[in-house]
Length: 393
Image (cartoon, rainbow, N blue to C red; front, top):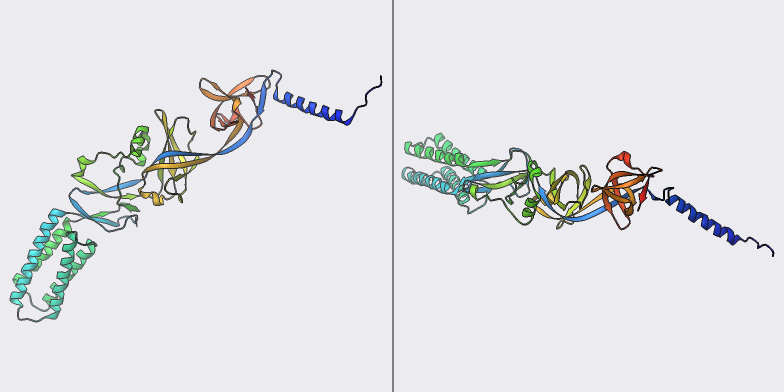
């Protein structure tokens, strides 16, 4: 029988067999392990979470019975020591204004008595100025008009000073009239002394919207906030302030634009975050505002975890927002291994690194995983590296 001739197809088949044998040898150690090579990996993880905003803000308090007039607009930036509001007791102001009205009525009556036959257009003009400024002050204090108390006060005092100066220069002094003018000046001064001016203790943004949680939610108290309290806040809870509202009440708040904080409430194990890690987030309802933040703390609270993000961007339109749903994303890098390489020892996740003879357990943090691979980070950087081999099961 003659020998069969070797064809080109034979060599092709042999090459395929050799390739399969190489793959099997690469994936199987002498001990029968199946191995995988550790690679670098990266992923963008996006979640929708509930969050609470914490700002560095101080609340301006006034007497509980005070009437407040604001000197700046909502959202205005003020410098340190700039006037924000004026407060005075409504009941007391009516009494003082009534006394001032009586004094001015007596002044007009005495004018009519002693100056009835004297025509003095300049004195009439000065008296008219005083009367107009006094009427503006009365209407402002009674809440009939809006205006700047400080400006009207200065204009009234200046009008009275000019009238007093004119009478002195024209030698029309009268002991009764002088006494009445002195009483008028003293009464105006009483009102001025009684008025309390609220000033900014530092530079910041002013807001007249207060939700009652300002003192409870401050940067210094973040570490003591619990998951249960965050849920209450998200449900609309407010601290009980009725005990103090009769004595004092909040009138405004002065807010630092940055830094501010976002408290994320997540289930334990839902997100793996570490100090310094960067996140991006967007609060629902504010589609054009995206902020960047860094993790400042990760605090377990029962079955939940509170992740504190520190934001250095100005808060802008979030000035009056306290809580809501946010879309949070983070770019994570680490080592990539098949899901089947993940094992657990005493509830610690890890992989078995192949060392040429056996497997060495390496503890890892699982950053995220999909249907086939897991993105991990070794607890010790020396324990695992790119190019190392891990046992798969």
